[in-house]
Length: 196
Ligand code: SAH
Image (cartoon, rainbow, N blue to C red; front, side):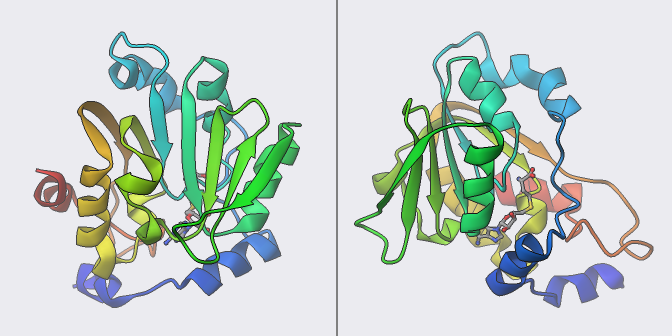
């Protein structure tokens, strides 16, 4: 079936950079995601001042929203353009510095210190570099991971969360024979086998 043909498809980092350059970023939404608003209570679980991770973050506006609520945000994104657009579109001053543990990587941090965006591949990260997180907002992330890398992605994410953490995952349910994306179809059975 087509789920099979999707499984072999690969979107390269180059292609993602190109999407950003061409402004081909239909996935970016100016409005905060309604499901984050709906399940915010599940993410926070009565806690304040959380460390929240945004894998494959793009320039997700929810990072600003949660930071303004007093949480500290860490994101990772391959496109430097995306990272810079995030800070400039929210008028946030920032500084950038190399990440000593990852060659070629940079970390962009808001001057106020509560938003840190790593510009590198997520597969370069580990808990010794970024620490562990109390919460994860995974929207447009697992579904954008190449199917051949899903297991690696899930294992990495599991290694990056604290025991008492909440992980909100957004996927899209559709007939993969009728639609090509967004970018990859992840059936619920696979989510269960990846995350347990
Ligand atoms: N989560 C964001 C963006 C989703 S699109 C949102 O909700 O808007 C997926 C993003 O992942 C793109 O911006 C792409 O540039 C980035 N990306 C793709 N592969 C990546 C990788 N291996 N490491 C880090 N970022 C990656």
